[in-house]
Image 1 (tube, rainbow, N blue to C red):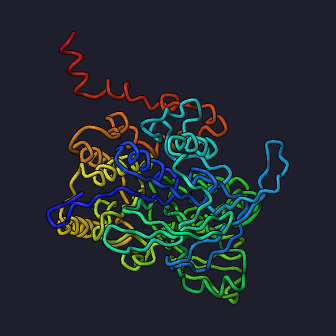
Image 2: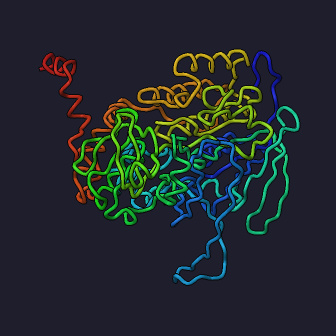
Image 3: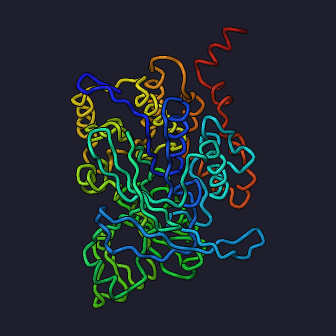
Length: 491
């Protein structure tokens, strides 16, 4: 693993936090190196899938406003387990609230939303449902199931020395707490746990006077509760836009979409009206349940305000490092390539970047981590890694944009990881694949493809290919001037 200013370390025991897409992928690449004695995966849920695990009708427990990323570990919610006949068998299972909602469909076509060693979901609709993706992740995890301790919560990870980590664990079924020592830790706990809900003028008193009106999309499950209600949705990224399209079928019109800037995934629709940011939650003297927007417009009699304002990065189990890793929660500090903790690269973070194609990206990250820890790849010096972080800050700032990789940065990042992994000394291990020219072509057209899919209404469920939506790469390629010129020369 060494670099010019760091001794080469011998890593034999690895702890992986989380069995979602990132944890499962990283574990496969670690296992393929065939040089680690122990790879233990700890997952607090009862199955693979991470954020894709659906939690039915969660209780909304968010603070309003919610501006503190430093939250304690969440306690499990216990549910009775039913057998195949639908009858409960007395067993209790721990679940944790995720942002999955009933009718969620991916915003990535299945032709690209796949792992390199798994078949695509081509027998399903082009943008698969959450149920299909959940089963896909269960199937993907089978190769590492023997490494996983489910229903086990990582409570704390403490560095006893550089490259030595004491991990405190809790078996949720028995409530037994125990400890293990590892040489390296993969942090793959996701970043959709602690909601962000901004502190807008007047929001605290307004919420106290109108309890239950303000919520966050983490707790949204279905449009039914919004029938005939006057609704504001704050935020217009993928989830906010999708949830608006569902609520807009039953709510009063227009549904008000409050946004700071134009969204690449949003599109005009008869059920909604775009409005600017909320400037103030007004006292009752201005009217019942009233808000003022930054352009001075006032709306009253608001029945529901749903914040689709994202999540904080949070690592409550990294108590000895959290203050160094997390400041505002908008990004993770002191990382190289969104991946290695610069001060101690025996800690790696999988899946932090946003606006990416996650499954393929976490494979690239997993490949690099596995090779570095197997001492088949070199890391730059600490100084060089810190300079990389400083360069990113100089380009996009030290806030929320740090981990955001809008196309084509997401593809460039992944291909850079693959190129890095291929430079490993000696043969062996598992190698991810680069994005192809056709993948890149499709990625650049995602908003248009998703809109064309949504415009089909219920007929979209039968659409399985890009070609059915008139997005044909081969046809497009033939129409390009350089190809037409080549064809004319050959005739």
